[in-house]
Image (tube, rainbow, N blue to C red; front, side, top):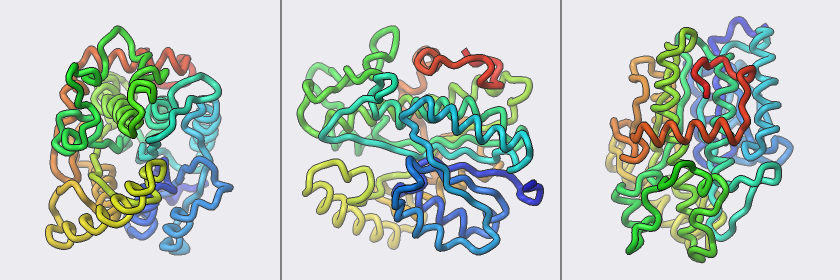
Length: 354
């Protein structure tokens, strides 16, 4: 039994550009070394070079493991969540102190769907898999200090100045905003919203990613509302962090064109990030290093003084998109998520789960 550990930290997307920086931050932090960590990747048998490199910073006493999980497979999410719950119920590992929903997936020049259920891959991998994982793992969360951290993105907000500059939602007829115009989110979930047929440019995939992140960000307030009224889970906290832009040719930009991938994301933006952090180390400018963003994410995750449902742009308090604050739409996304996953009462301890 792992009784000497203070809790369990779970991070999805641990081999990603930001995820591996979060891993490095955890395993090299004296405070966080006292926790057991589960670093989730899509396939732990793959090379996972960034994660492997980050783990080299771990000292011998660090307790951690790498777990495979395909967030785009609801069946796989169920198996992994059930396995983690089983280990915590038998006290093999301690309760979950933090669940960091970090994994991200963008398709710029392609569009694919999940084989099992036919969901748009961006929707399933960025949002729906995370939602199911979270509601299932609530039975294993620390009831006093447990925290769910949503890693957001400015692309979820059409009114953000950088998003407006990039222009994915710009259309003379406002075709791409608001995200939700009907009685359900089926167009986003099933990938009929912003298809390559609608727009053959790379903007179509960026919009689908933004829509998925929008759904994920609504979890911050909607899940918190349900937790607050729960007799068992009312002390559990949800928070969100926009980590800023962290350019890399091997990050989310790896699926875009050569110039954007290698020149813009591989050279120009990283240089800007390092210069800005050097000049203004505590600023919240859009371009940041992964080390800085990892620190910001884990600060919000572990600082018990952070308010429930708080959202940060780096370290600065911020607001989510106006549409993400629409209570009716937040509830709609939740109800549709229950429908898509076919969640059963036995799979979650959350009382108000429907």
